[in-house]
Length: 153
Length: 153
Length: 153
Length: 153
Image (cartoon, one colour):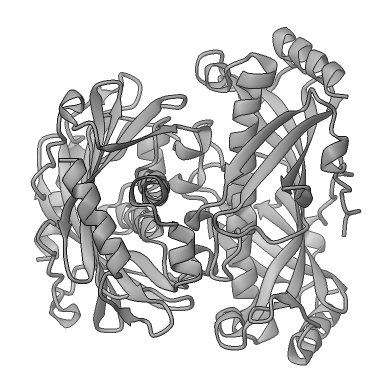
């Protein structure tokens, strides 16, 4: 077992942190009546798409479709702290943990009110979608991540 | 970033290890043409269902539906080592890492031929689906996990 | 082949029609780069959930979870008119086609601007989730559907 | 509401019909404990992939990835006749209903034992994935569909 992630208390999040509410839907839930574990990652991918536009000023879909920059994952991790229930609103925060040469790390905790329900950590790896190999972070993406990291700490 | 999991070399796996081939389908893949990261977890859940029947002698669906034993996840982790492509056959191995009081840990590496393409680690938490709270591992599940651990090491 | 549904022109929709914008995400799309056909139904289920709250004044999740009224489908149909692309906003309209004894029919066209991209038709069947059998439409649901039908025609 | 599809009685299926068993998994099911309606389409897409290889002698993934022939859907329809439950084995049959210029129609009923649980009808449209437009059925695909239709009637 990996060490359990400790998400920051919600009211300790700096003002500059990107927060995104997501509604838990019927289709997110499994026969136990709670969010299916893999579906949490799906939701978080949507949060990261919106984070690109809102916090980094870059269009996720343009990056992939037009600039052919892959934004796949090298690592995905989640600690499921409380079950997610249909109708819940979960507010996800996006925090930059690391900016590397050809990857960056995000911590994405989700809160129901002030209660953390999930803490995810993701490593996004940039790839050249035509050459099918790793590529360095594009300069504008690197600069936007650094600026966001600065104002959200 | 969490430490990257090091999956065992495929030809070093003991003979008793449960191995399950999964075919990568069109629907598993994303616009980058590779398996969507969250879908890997979905595949692995299917592998674990079959592992219950084949290696533990317990029916996953009977446990959940009839005995009302939840088998949700407390933690899920994956290192994506190589992209998964449509038509690939990935052979997943299931290894027991830990048997706790109300949870157990699995290491699930996936191989394309001898090449590891993914290494996942999962913590399964047993819950009482009617009382909605954690419960100790049922005795038959604990005994079956211990017997499997013994013969797969 | 069933007859192709002819969605109404968008600018002909009555003012009372519930309209819901949905953003097409990376995870909705397949290796052909367009929305995966089954995912359209998933999106539409979310639209219907929100339609319950916004247009019918009934909470979809309370109906299912607390009142144990199943809202499954007896029939689902879609004509895919144009491919959906990442980043598109599709505006779904919800129209009541029929209110039966233990089911109701919805027509759900989706538009990108004024262009129809999908036309779906769904038959929702009410069931008693504890007795596992069909049940008549609850009175409040029937009345809310009739009132909506009236003001959206 | 569209006319409900009447699937053929299972024991009336000609010997040449392609039949594929699919196991209903935990992840296919929703909080009502039955297969989520959109997930049936996902299963059926997998059945069609395997039908290409087993009954048509053509590799679905090679068609899409290497020959750049899109096999998307123009229409999808399902009548849900009985709920699908975790652990069920559903045997899907694939029947060719129509072979057109740039599309073909399939009827895909699913049986639990002799009981029909779903009847789906799909129109597959061939497209040029590079030019992003409709294309005529490739000759080998057309010939294989015609030969299959002949021996499965």
